[in-house]
Image (cartoon, rainbow, N blue to C red; front, side, top):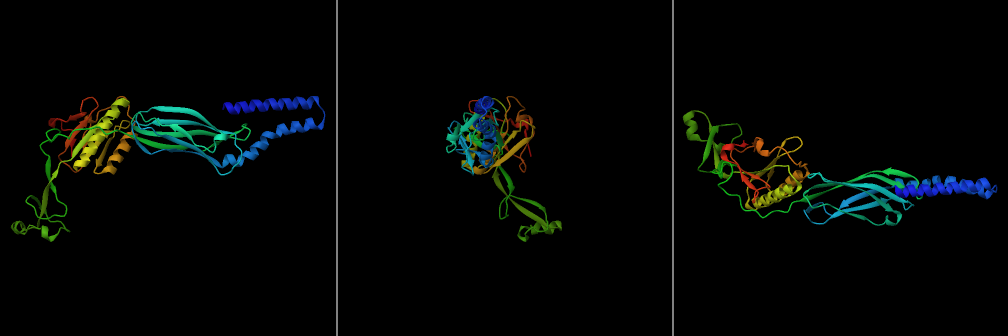
Length: 348
């Protein structure tokens, strides 16, 4: 805006000088100079219009995911289909951390000498969260800098992941249903086994699964379903509110436990209450892709200073009657708090 204001002031001075010269000088040169100064802005706009309409601004992060504290940034580039003169481009650079709510806005300018280069803007990676960057109010000026035309905005995202903390294995004697480390569940595909369950025959059941001896006694077909011992799943919960430092500690510990449980081959779930609509969010994590998907979703949820604890909500792990429940906190030294069995916070 300052550059455009300066260009307009200079043009107004030139226009005034040409007008006074034309008033006090009756020669054709004075008239020609006066007409030239009057028409010059329109000629410059006509010359620059193809270049203005053919250019757009882009923003690209160095990487799309980065660990907290690692330096990275955004590449801002102006691309044009025509090599025609443009005075300068102005825009407003905005970035926001969706998790912490931290915002930053800055007015930036690129002049004609910088059109072949990329501008670099440092990203704020001191806290976890999804960084959303937007370039708005893009104005491209003509070669004289007198007129500005709005161009499309640009947007990009960068996820700042936590730094996984060194955590100890989850104890077997903690958490809800701590004594149910293994539970009997239906074995897919059937097969022989010492433990089994009985039910009435349904169309489509394999013939080999029929319990013929018991079926002859009851005078109806009875099917034997083989059961096998499976590890009871682990449920990790955390409160999605607090200061930025608290959320960093919680996510560091969560990521540490997620990596440890994946290495041990455990079935586990992560749940939290979405701060804005109080909706319970649940993710089953079975591999590295699931871990990253959970973190991307949790880091994009706004975390206010205060909110309702997930422990005040009836938690649900579909398909399981028994789970081992652990709550991750920021206050305790190890960041781990087991649910007492009598609280019955987990329901199937």
